[in-house]
Amino acid sequence: MEEKLNLTKEWDKVFPKSERVNHEKVTFHNRYGIMLAADLYVPKNSRGPFPAIAVCGPFGAVKEQSSGLYAQTMAERGFLTIAFDPSFTGESGGQPRYVASPDINTEDFCAAVDYLCCRNDVDSDKIGIIGICGWGGMAINAAAIDTRIKATVSSTMYDMTRVNAKGYFDEGDNEEARYKMKKALNAQRIVDYKNNDYELGGGVVDPLPADAPFFVKDYYDYYKTKRGYHKRSLNSNGGWNKTSALSFINMPILAYSDEIRSAVLIIHGENAHSRYFSEDAYKKLKGDNKELFIIPNAAHTDLYDRADIIPFEKLENFFIKNMKAE
Image (tube, rainbow, N blue to C red; front, side):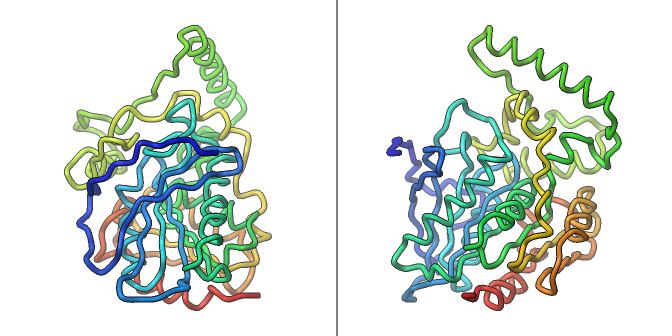
């Protein structure tokens, strides 16, 4: 489990470095033996043990983008945090590259909890997670299986299993549509096997068509401009392997979310095309420690990096309230 990773030494984030926290690169492994790379943020001039938070997402992003901003900001508010690259992406290990898995990527969150629990400067009874976009769904799935997680935040959430199996707004939710999709993906498997390589599906469309729907323009404005472009981001560049969608089609990740006993806060923008994912996920949760918080006038990517819109104070209070030992 000692896979050697090539970690960038310079600060190459899309957000400025805070002088209120200490930063370093760290690594940890998941139970599949994949080594993961993370940025560690620790409050300056404070002593542990700290409450801790692991952050990941969005789907197709890297830790130098949105998750790093969330992690650094929460460290400014007194938490020890890590923002990690999921398996097969960014600076993390795993082969082949640029593949996603509902199982392995949920495990990535649980592995982050393993790592945090084993740090001397962390209070292992006070650990939470934040998942952004597609990793919002993974975070809720992790909370359903990992009883060590005391509090979970999903921000501008996607249910990647639902959107892959049914399309946007469930418009492709029929057997014939899924059959055609599976035929195309299985044909691609043969092409990839013959070529001994995996064909990429392409990141965010570029150049941007004039008639592109708003949510595509929203993604372009983040991933393809100075605002959020990063050279290791899948969405900013070549995208995921085409066949990544296969494992998501028939593995609904929120199947046992109604069994989550720990606290969950779901935040979403009022004007986000993806809002229905959060609303429907919230309907399934049980208990008075669950909350859906809709942010007025916010679009999907506003919750990636708009510090004036992301409710960090609410997140801070949520974690402080709910990070308690049983």
